[in-house]
Length: 487
Image 1 (cartoon, rainbow, N blue to C red):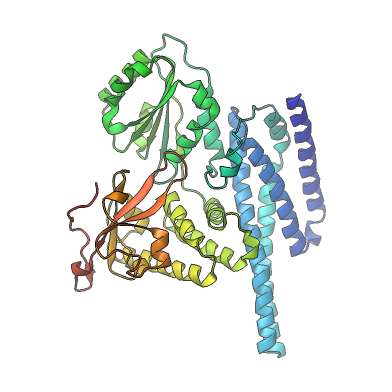
Image 2 (tube, rainbow, N blue to C red; image 1 turned 30 degrees about the horizontal axis):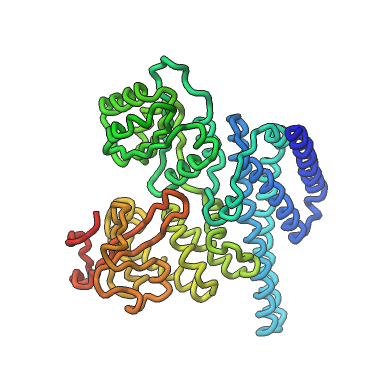
């Protein structure tokens, strides 16, 4: 009965979307910018409903996964254009009123009108393009929606909805479904010497562990396996300690920081088969060559597109606050997203900045932090030739003088231990809100950039040291190793 109802509902939604598309095609050239934005908003709302519904079901069809990825990309682009259109309308109105007050001459009004017309054309073209992308994405959604009604719904605990906005897995819809499908599919028949292995490959800080942790928290996954073991690739054979717990199907997640010898992997692989037939392995690493151990096609996580990153940043920084009430802040958020994307920003700096900015929804405060961030990026590129994000990934010191208003450098702590107890600690949000000495310890300290809200709640901490004494002829010597640096 539920499948039948879902199918009928899907048919109605599909027909309504088709109605909107046909109506749009018949009157496209007669549309005003206001009407176009309104229709874009309506179409985005309905596409968002479909994506949320798909995200709450188990999808095993690879074609549906590809279609879901395509429509989600079109949705994020549409949201970007929608916000830009709203801000452009506000800016045009403000500019026109300012010119009218300061210069009532026909020349001033003509220039304002001409500038506004040029901007309107650009915005209209982007709106047309976004509408076309959404139309193309939903053109064949009828079958998708009907098939979606036949997919099993995920069970959610009552408080999951409440926690969703703070502890959510953003985007990666197709990747999540592929990982779920791999884990829940039928196991290899007994006697086979092959063990299902799925590599999850992607750059540092891109969300590999977050994706795996999110899927492993699914109720069906947890009930499918007797236990879930998390291992470090540098110590594969620690699994021997879990021999007695591997009598049933076990999911093993191995995090590799460096490559592993083929012989060592074969020994590990053989041991798992011997101890627990029907188990599965997930490899998590930034090293593409580790994909050679996979038994299926790897999941490759790429950097979020600008539209995805922008949507994520805006969601994190505004939270429950309506962004339409702060159009100026939305524009500054766009500029933050551009900086993050241009510097190949990972999820860590994205969450770090959002956490700091949402403390104070003030235009001047946001603009000040943006200017400091731009200066910090330029300073580090000038000194080291690469962006701060790349320096962090390489384990190199980063100059944060522009944020702290004092000559300081930081280097990532390599372990996820309780570093808060080793030295005085300050969060990044506290530092940027008040960089004075009252907040910043006089001696070396730990800077907590961000703590993940999703289990395993990874802590991203940096050892910060005063390098004023290291300056010589305008050059900062950050390569010198200091005593007491957490490792």
